[in-house]
Image (cartoon, rainbow, N blue to C red):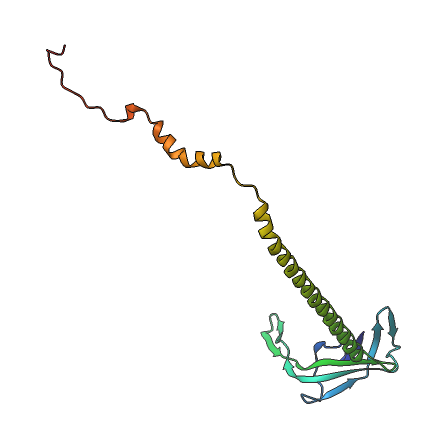
Length: 198
């Protein structure tokens, strides 16, 4: 639900929780004020437009405090007359937070509170379902692990033994490599030849 209000000669579109700066009002910080000039109230697809204001509609706002707007420079200049006037202005503002929008006995704040409670309840249901599913998954995992542990010794006993031949070959492999070395690899002893040997 949202509304369009008028204050200080300006119009503002507001919802519950909106913070806005309006023209200076004669209120103190911490007070709650009611704005009666409501020009439009919309709730979903239904909208009520005032002529000029909507009957039985009001907007409640909490006063946060006062502030000042940005400086606006006004400069007047008249050529050939030596007239130059520069002025600065900062508008005094009141900061409001919209607390509630009421229309024909219906409250926007109450609707939001109910929606928040429903959302929290749905979230709690989802978390409970997730916790329950996690517990079931943990139990199933433990059951499968126990079953796998029970079947492991039986599988080891039933496994065929590896052939001895393969084991022998694997153990003799380094010796075979040594046997395949050529005699040329070993250093030769050279003997000196004499004329008698020839």
